[in-house]
Length: 78
Image 1 (cartoon, rainbow, N blue to C red):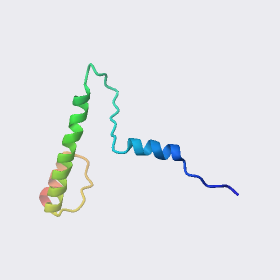
Image 2 (cartoon, rainbow, N blue to C red):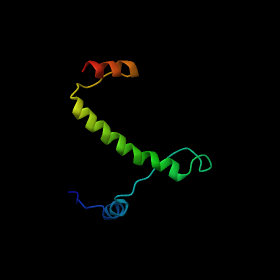
Image 3 (cartoon, helix red, strand yellow):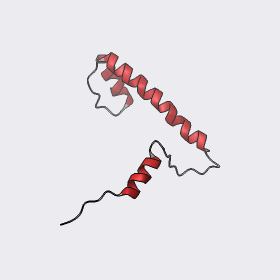
Image 4 (tube, helix red, strand yellow):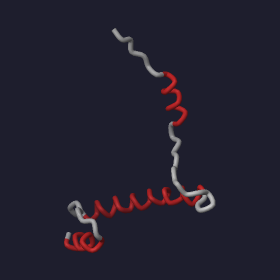
């Protein structure tokens, strides 16, 4: 029979990294520094929150369009 053990090393590593977020990009720091890369992600939360509120207020059916005009027309009709 196999004896089951917890991987204590992996558990400790996971606890140390808990709450740490990393950003990966192929841009060099000369082109875009860390602030230029991270700031849009902070703004993304605000945009997503506003969209959630407007989506619940609109009470529209799901949008399965990919181009801007059909999306606008779908929302207008709904």
